[in-house]
Image (cartoon, rainbow, N blue to C red; front, side, top):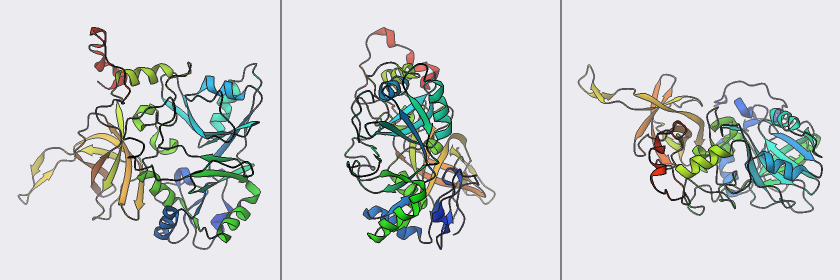
Length: 397
């Protein structure tokens, strides 16, 4: 296996670590770093054991400085960051006026600068810059100066460490809620992940220092497989122009339901209060026996009724599209797996079909966002005023 499963892309930065012997470039949103370095199974095992480093230098970095930075970001985004303490990690979303996800960012403040780690740095920095008005803030796209390295460590950055963002997923934050299982029962509960920012010109030296301590360098084949296992959404993969955060169970870590108003807040509150987001994220266990795998973006179908074939056996009709594959991964224990976004109405026990070049593969669902589409803290419906609201077009009724 030498080719990345994703299509070509022109990276903003091409990592010098791609010069390593055996390095296979990643494609698509991960272009610019390595998909693997020759032994993806061993790389996954090293990452799972908690001793590896992942080149994430293709990610974007946006900085916000100035005395108004935290209260300003608080007013614009889905997260409560007004009093964010230094070296405390969280994440936020920027929504459009209809509540659709436009940007997501990991957030950490060092006391003078707020650092946003994102897959949409140029667009996010440009939008934030337009929203400054007369406030005392400065926005910069700092991607050219800083690169991220990922470590399987569940710890915030210490005062003597570089700027570090600890992934809060899947621990339900204060003010958040969940559409999936309890935090302790969540398959992502054991995933340790943090991003350490290093000067881009020191990327190779920082990796060598970790290798000297016994941590091998691993690629995105490994990190993406563990992300899928943990049901962790990514903007470049799970988000499209209709995505609302409820569909991806993103209210766990990126949305504060009790903060002040922000763009898109009305949709967030309405769907939480009434329930039933239009779509839901699922994990798919793919039948790998035929050596076919779907690509990201492939249609997911609900099989039709069995129909007789020329040989007398019954075969399922292809069925109607009910969603799309968003991420495909090869997990060293689970086998071929994927994340997909499907209609909320798809039966949770249905075996689906994922389109592939040359056919389709069966895909068993693992429920992430339950089909009932309600949270444990959903307000109790009161009286006839709520009657008929299930048919609201935003709620997929």
